[in-house]
Image (cartoon, rainbow, N blue to C red; front, side):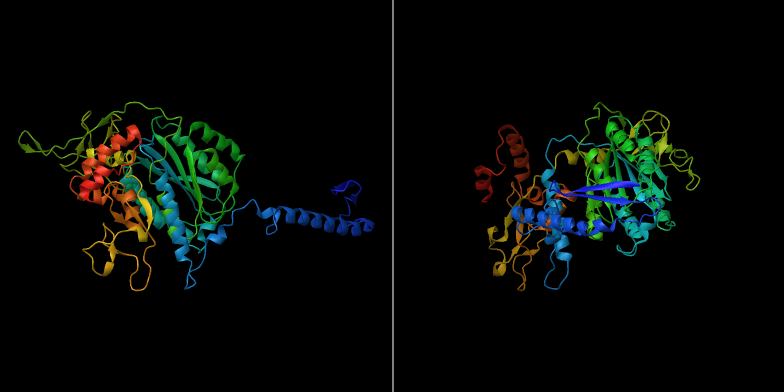
Length: 483
């Protein structure tokens, strides 16, 4: 027999509930009316306190952000416009966080941990969560290696409370794309084990050199995780090693996932639809700020050469090292390839780490594509459409984007763009799509690179603004270009 004491805010009211172990339903009937009286009294007292604090909200509502009020349907009753606005706002926030001379992890070693449990068969993302994820991951992998050519990526699948390494860390996108084709038809059963996936990735990333950035991106569809021991031990180990973990949830926000990202300085996001899912994935393409545990040192890299002719004769037939041990795609005898300048081993594609001497083989364009992350295009100034001047070259006062010549403003009794974006150097106006394309893909302002003389002033004014903090748009520049 045990006693349960429920004490009210009034010190004189104490409820004692007696329950027998053999008969749990045996409750003292004399105390039941008091139960209802005390509960009703507590509820009235709490509501009275809430009315004093806030007449419109209950106390349990004050700690939450009303995100549902930000999503409003349009005239046709659709939510596409509201979701597009949320995506656009998130992109602008990411662009505002990018600053020059920021320490970034350029050589990235990233593991994609994909949930392959029964929850990935839910058809809220068409056709299913898994197939939608695989399709978007194909785009992500191509974009990842395009923007991070000297980085490596691996894939881990969470199946039936186990973690399976689908691909090792490698810089070849073809290997990952082929592995994703097999994951699209995998059987989805049981629950995932988040801890097993983190332990498997941690075991591999521990031996990665200290100068490289180590990251884990988890795509979670399940609301539960079946772990062998306390997952907090793994989270503490990840935090100690400086491994950055980010989570993309396909269902809802999960406390353990949010806690994981907070402890490892990662990001967390819950998707709304496939477009928002794609935006969440693409946000992982740009290199993150370098962790404090990263050590900076000179890294040896080799620029391989090709042997088309040897002493006036054609190069001899040979096999490449990257396919010599691959049974699915065996190496073929050929005369073309990239030869390591240190050990003369041949490889069919770059970048790659030489299997014989361990030298990282890259080309000049690979380093150039990694370099632009350190010097991003300055953020454009967001202005209302009315602030855009009307050009005399355009008829009927229609204003166009400088990059894509899209008509801005009032077009056929329909408002096309309410805001425009102006470059601080060339003073040209751009639409919202071109603004995102310039900052995320092109990495160069169209106006600054097409107007003669502006490109040189950009670098001169950038150096000057770093010294005295002046704004790039000076009166001398505006008078020279008539802006």
